Length: 342
Image (cartoon, rainbow, N blue to C red):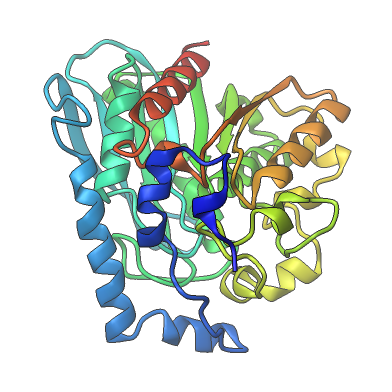
């Protein structure tokens, strides 16, 4: 069993909270239907709600200044299914026309919500850098976000596309510079960030965004992989990837077909050539670290302007829980905002 206490790489502040983040490995059902049922029992929902309550402490004055920002919510009809999704919109409280970060929350494309306290705090930190932040609450594949529906791939990706199109349609009303919109997201949101960029490219609409910023992207589809050493050496540091969770939750057929819009690490040069600039941000002590780096190298090989940042001492997606290592969150927020501003 992994002993995080003896790992010299991990920031001591993170060692204090790792016991709270790390759960016992879950015995998975053998079907998607069984996994959906298991993730929506009364006890599973109570556990989720307790986590939501715990992360509320991120959105306090001690972590991020609350004044000077405007916080709104909008409902959007998503296509092609006609379902409703929610957009949380956070920006400086003025009518200046600003660059915009279109942010996609994490949770393995399966759980969580952009309305959680840590995500509100994270968006506020970014918005304080002088940009607008539009956070899309798409259909998760297992547990509801702020919308009741759950559905496997490609439902969440379609919702993210619909939210982006709505953002452009409403740019004038939102006081957004439509020529300076970037997509960003962490973990499952990093997957959807890269997948949405490739979907835009495939459909001839990549000009809707000027960049992609993926943090700790969850993109390989299956683990462990010997060519991704972090999927072995870091497994058990918060995340346990050595199971079929991703395949069952997001869609077995898409994984078997090696669909890059479901699992972007399957991307080939034709899927990548023509993408706008990309930033990949990885965490040193994350099982997902090396798939992010591998994707970065694919981008370079496909002549995509890309750079990669590694946050030393951090665990998976440390940045989006700002109370843990606030200076790391603020530094990354500044980088994302500068990326959006161009």
